[in-house]
Figure 1 (cartoon, rainbow, N blue to C red):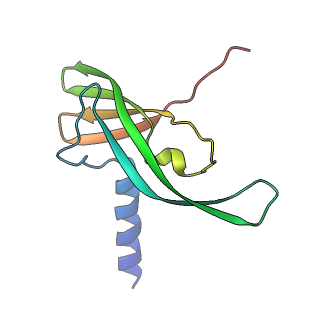
Figure 2: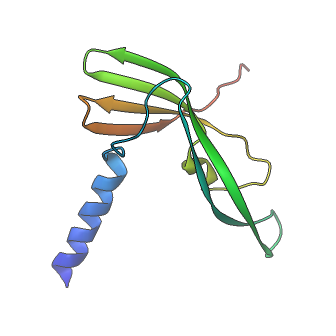
Length: 114
């Protein structure tokens, strides 16, 4: 039993660090895909669970290629929905492809001047 828990933890950690993108993932400017699903959340200072069916769009807005790297700027990603709010706007993310095999996702934070 102990070895299976260790295996599950190792598999989880590797899945969080890197993973292959689906073979048909279009990393070209203007490409997009739509996720459909259900979300549930509670509003601030409330214990009432609210639910909604949504469509969330991920769009490639820019692509930069250098040597063995391809970097795609994405507007929107399902990770935006982890802390769902009904008026949530799509975030900016970088999908970095290394040698056509490894993929890394980076969420961008918008910095505002003080």
